[in-house]
Length: 408
Image (tube, rainbow, N blue to C red; front, side, top):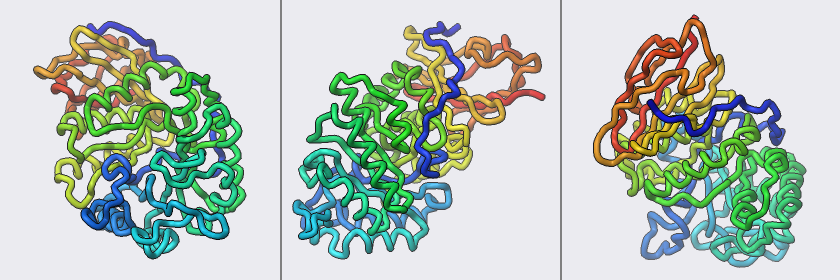
């Protein structure tokens, strides 16, 4: 039997959410950063540099390969898109060589394809890549983004004092709202305060941001994915109460289809981001992604669970360090629960044996129907009482996910 390490508690009913009507479920889309970074060498690497052509290519692939119809709607620019100087009116402007038609024209192109465009800025003097930041220019930048037709704005926190962010980020929220254009606001605010040893006011953050980064940037590796999962386990009692429709913790991008994850590890990342009810922002090359990864990202059953309208953040409820297995649960609508059994063991598949009572699911005299999610490693279908044995094989560095549905 798995040893209980963390107890599953009821979610606090006190959700403090930014009420701009956006992100009622976790945002879905594509973002440039993890896969393409700050590659501005369009002379030698024209297909992979940060340019309007890259974002047009990804928008095309999202439409033609089924991602838009599956729910992925945002095409997000990250750092290194702008000129190194503002224009004569103090407005940000795109790099003229890499974005010769400007950001508004790119937004128009993306909108015509039935998608939305996101962009990036920084609360400090400079962005992390050394481009103009928004400090001292918050209002004009918010209006510039609205004039361009931007639909999501990510504000980073390089070259800024984290102690001032409790005032600065809410100022940007006010200016974005004043534009009258619905712009989803993605904040890096808590990550920088955490790294500086400042106590994070998540109530304030949830009132001002639709999503927020808590922890380190994801890298293209399984170790990076595990590091984020460990942080979320450690902080789950702090993060769960502030999440709900309109406001989501953001563990960073989905790296499925890149270089660092095996197929089993890719399934595990998607499973855990679904447990977290996390934004599904892919960062990969949709032009060359392998079919098995594409099919995983487009799985309708998995997407539907991630987009469950309750928006609850899942928690780790069981852990056995001896065999490197842990179990997470997430409450869904209609009193259903998602169960994810994740193995960190790298040598052999493991047979996990537990009960619904061990998982701290609410007691039901009639029990639950446990139905496996085939795309995420389980095809079981059982009617279980609370103390009946739940047995599941889990592959190395893999996951098995199932739903517990109340039996009538």
